[in-house]
Each structure stands twice: as structure tokens, then as C-alpha cells.
Length: 92
Image (cartoon, rainbow, N blue to C red; front, side):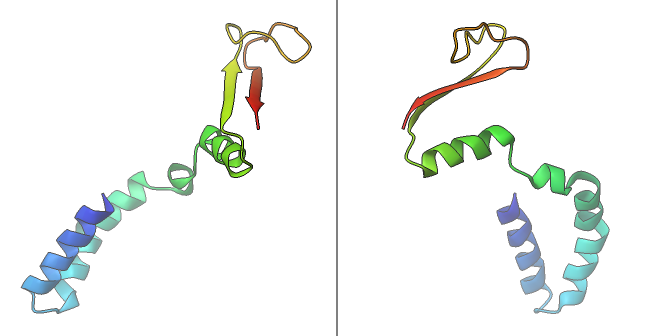
């Protein structure tokens, strides 16, 4: 999406002989309200699972599995996982 925004603003800037007034007006009228409505720190934050995967991989762990109960199996002691519980197995 950022490529489209950059290209559009760049094209408008070139068409307007590199005067930024038209580009600024277009940004303020169309893009800024969209960004303010749909983009927040939460929408930009990484999903926790992605962060966990990246942490494992950065430490050399390439073979791991995350399973969630109740079909997720058992914990390290062999107890069945309940709803919302997570097991992580891996060879690092």
C-alpha cells in the first residue's frame, strides 16, 4: 500500500511542477482522514505469535510447534491442555 501512496503523491508532485500545495491538499483531504480512522498503534503492532516465532528463530530454533488446547495435546508433564493454554515444543 505504501508504494501506491508514494507513487500517487509523487505523480501529483511531478504534474504540479514540484509545488507541494496540491500534494498537501490531496493528502490532507483524502489520505489523512483515512489514516486517522483506520491506522493506530494497535494496527501497526506485530501479532504476538509472530513476535514469538521471530524470537525462537533468532535464537537458532527452527523446529518448533505451538499448540492450543483443548485439542492441543498435553503440557510437559503429560497433563491435558485446557482452553486457552499453550504448549510449545521444539528442538533448538
